[in-house]
Length: 398
Image (cartoon, rainbow, N blue to C red; front, side, top):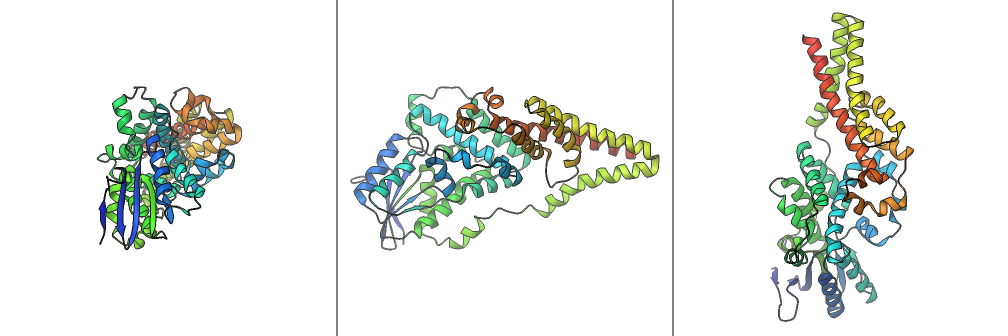
């Protein structure tokens, strides 16, 4: 039987004391940009002296918070090869959103999580990182979101970065008591239910199971305030069977695979049929139209991104080919060329959060310019595919 109560007489209101299978759990709900949360975490761990401290971090996020030179180990070319550039961009957008709010409060985002680790180690208490791998979380969120809702998510994140409205004292006080990203996802929950499910609900289950199975009779768990309710809900249940399911990247559906090959087959089949029915010269003219319809918009996207000349040439050459295969898009090809021709320097990785909040920063920062190249050349290629495909099919049936 799970019993939960807030012991206001002895504990802060954000410390939930839970009796679970003859063990005591101190579940601390924090805001990732609050100095008050930092102090509360330190005080609770020091006073309770638990057997184990559980933290809402995974190895990657922990390294990102603690390793000052972490960007030197990031291989952008490998990220692009693994088709993870979009998830990296979303991760950076969310981190920049937190950092922007944190700067107004004078606190580094995640400071209370680091404080928990440092305090636990100072008292020689074992630390367990209990969150799901952030790469799995972001890729599951990205794959579960439709094309149009991906655009909505990116627009919402971009909009939050460029919003220059000063946060009032009342709002700042409110933010100190909340998990900011959880609040953002809750606000967008109606429009993006699948994103909320992956970023919040699934992680509630994952965190609850890791905390439930942590060793020791007395445990302190430090999590974002937005996860507290969900964790308490799942603590009484054995969710070990669900962990494997929510820790995998869902494969591309067979329907999507079929659709991905359908358009290229229609285009190629149409050109061949035109050649048979109307002659090689007409087929050649349609093929040239396809090349120009794809190559020009994609190259224009590279020019708008102020890409390296080699990248622009690559965009023009790659788009007509990549549009005929779902295996790789023009955006990934051009992003790879851009990284090779104009690699970002470490300083630009370190200032990316600040640069993201300025429109000009997307062109000045070489890392952000890679993202621009990826987005704009891919968008140009997509436009070219529909324009070119429409014209070729029209010529076939006309």
